[in-house]
Image (cartoon, rainbow, N blue to C red):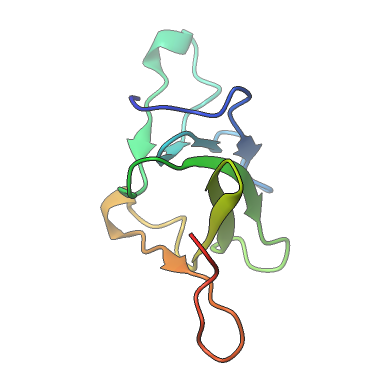
Length: 109
């Protein structure tokens, strides 16, 4: 893993699979063997590339649909909210969409 992270990097264990963890920094990372022994064998996959300057502050998985994950990327007073509807897919297939306000306006970056 590389990149910046907030002072306290956000993470979340998958709601039903204790081997899977999501970790936020300047990008979203996922391990599907986070409880591996020895710990040096834990593997991380990047789940997308995002514009520089913002770090992930919040990660939340839907309790209803485990394929949906929300995240907030922020710095200072600005933030961008994202949603993925296929976060359990292969890392290279995951799509993140900016969440927009009603009327089609994007939330301020």
